[in-house]
Amino acid sequence: MALSPQWLDELRARVTLSGVIGRTTRLTKAGHEFKACCPFHNEKSPSFTVNDAKGFYHCFGCGAHGDVIRWMTDQRGLSFMDAVKELASEAGMEVPAPDPRAAQQAEQMGGLHEVMKAAQDWFMAQLAGPEGERARAYLATRGFDAHTVQRFGFGYAPEGRQAMKGALKAFPEDRLIEAGLRIAVDDKEPYDRFRGRLMLPIEDARGRVIAFGGRILDAQKTDAPKYLNSPDTPLFDKGRTLYNLHRAGPASRQTGRIVVVEGYMDVIALAAAGIADAVAPLGTALTERQIEMLWRLVETPILCFDGDAAGQRAAMRAITRALPMLRPAHSLRIVRLPVGLDPDDLIKRDGVKALEALLTQPSSLLDLLWEHERDAAPLASPEDKAGLKARLMAHVDTIADRDIQALYRRDLLERFSAYAFPRREQREWRPGGGRGAPAPARSDPAQMRRLRRAVDGGTRDALSAAVLAGLLRFPAELARHAEQLWHAPLADPRFAALADAVDDGAPLETDALATILAQRGMAAPHPDEYAALPFGFLAEAAPPDQAREDLAQAVGLLVERPALEQALAAATRQFERDLSDGAYAEQQRLLKRKLDFDSRLRQMASARAGAPGGALPNDGTMAD
Image (cartoon, rainbow, N blue to C red):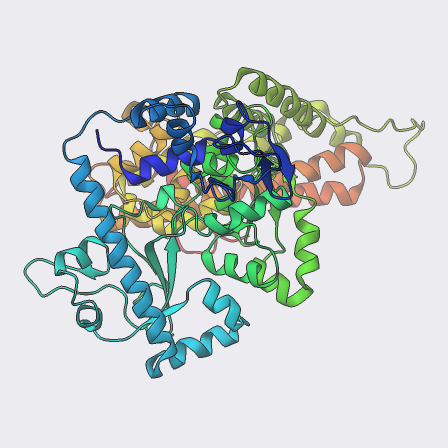
């Protein structure tokens, strides 16, 4: 049976070498290593060392050397496959079934490692040459010194579609294509993937180059992506790779932490500032596989994403992926950077101590989850409060560990109750009205009930359901509205899920979006849910262009409503408290705006495809 190098690397990573050796040999901690008297020869003073970070043992007396598999074969006397099976059972891994192609694949991958090493050497040589002047100038603007440039292996890919082919002519064309260095399109001549870019090698857990990332240097090329990574290859799977893991892993054993930032340039900026225990995902949201890799290093990794909206969405996506995986003592912590700053910006502005201070006081996963959902929508009505509770409990239900699930449910329900139903301050009762007291009619209970019904609105669910159905009917329109849907405090979590799909680059097709909702445990609206909704953009006979414009106006109404309802609810509560003329006037002003909003909504809901007035008028009624 032939096992792939990747599988064996995974096995070695999942087993702690000192733990295996310590079962039969007494080890003593010595700095970052362990020492013992060598079990392979007789000695009185210890010359046998075990290094977990590097994954090998070594005896300076007899020369015994090997990894955890070699220990099992040499010291325990097991065959290679018996050693692998025992270690795999301990690590919770399944030994792959025999595959006659495995040996051929292993040989093929070994050849690809040679290709990547040659490409890296060539990129570094180009950076040092005349064509690398622009790349060197950019590195200088980032403040990276020569040690940082050399340590992280920066290089340069020159302009020219065939430059690499000539430089790496010792390797066949198909190998360069398979390694992701060249692109073959139909029957045209293949060409270099990376051109005119600052190059950075992406390495595996053993420090071998498996892919590249390239940053564009020509700001005029607006049609090209700013950062370009290698595609998935036999060596590289971006969802199973963390940039800088082979350096950050040993560093994390000293600091007791691991920091996750958004991109590899952030990792290098932190390393240049002295923070060596940082890693980054590669162009995707943090995956379940990457979270498991982090948990093998520390129990609570720290997410340190940018302070902008995209960074906070990335943090929430990581949280929702981690929730089902939570287990005792294993979680995530989150640092929120100032708005508009990434880690490098913060270091340059305030110094590395400012970032270190933030890293020492991260928020818990539970705290950020609560704050995100609490701020997602106002609590202006019972429906809003029920929506907050439903969103919180939906997150809790995804947690597989029953003990953790119960603790999360208790904590979040306590926070919800304290926030949604705060204790009211007792007011002193004073007899008599006094000058300027409002007329008794204003405090009439029947009028108050009518005002509360006005705050709640009667077409709330209909509008949300119609907009959701409209977006699935015209999925390409989602890109147009994703940003405002994400920022709006909408009770239905499906809107945020669809906005995330745009941010993740998912295909904007009805079936694809329905699948994304299903994967998150959310159901796409069934035709029966909206068949009776009287919105023209849902009608089959509606002209597509007109339907899209009507849908855009419906999205606008949906986004406008929460802020208006929140303001009206606050004004109503203020009036109930002090019954002043000013509070009454403000409540009536907002009530008028709410009634006008309802009128516009009814107008849209009654519009029919092809009927006169099918679109909302542009006569000033859309604004207050």
